[in-house]
Length: 195
Image (tube, rainbow, N blue to C red; front, side):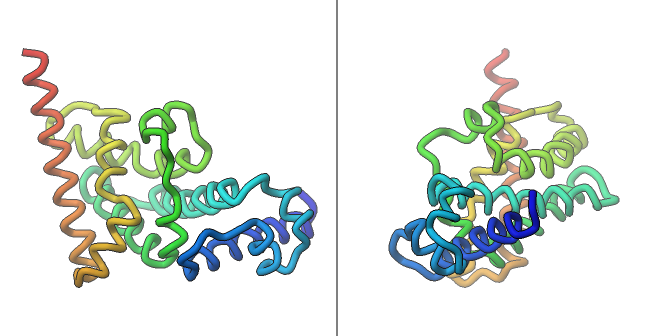
């Protein structure tokens, strides 16, 4: 990609994130283009919709999480804890823009269809979740472990916990503990079903 093309793309993603962070009303592609100081036509050459920019933004944040996870030297629950805490910090850093991402399709469906913006996040979490379930003697829960993580670490709910008075550390600690409990409970329910 040419440097000016890449620069425009970065500016559009950054502008969208800033606008969604601070706007209580829907944001248009024209507004994003104006804020990024590019023409609307240029914005449409890069992205066909506001949703597509948000997907690019979410993929960018997911890539940060994936890179963080790859640098970890711990394994299992310790690694899952570190990666989950880093996600909470990313949600707080990017705030409202992270809470804008909602789909009418379910998480597992989108995950199995290799929805682009979910791939880096899944890559960051798959191994820590697999190691954790193995260490807990639960076996590999696969996509369902990612599903449980996604339920608990929804950006809207993380922001809600912080607004309700929890510190970042308290929110992360409780969410990780709840995830551990959810993994154990999910596995126990599966064992009961098989009996």
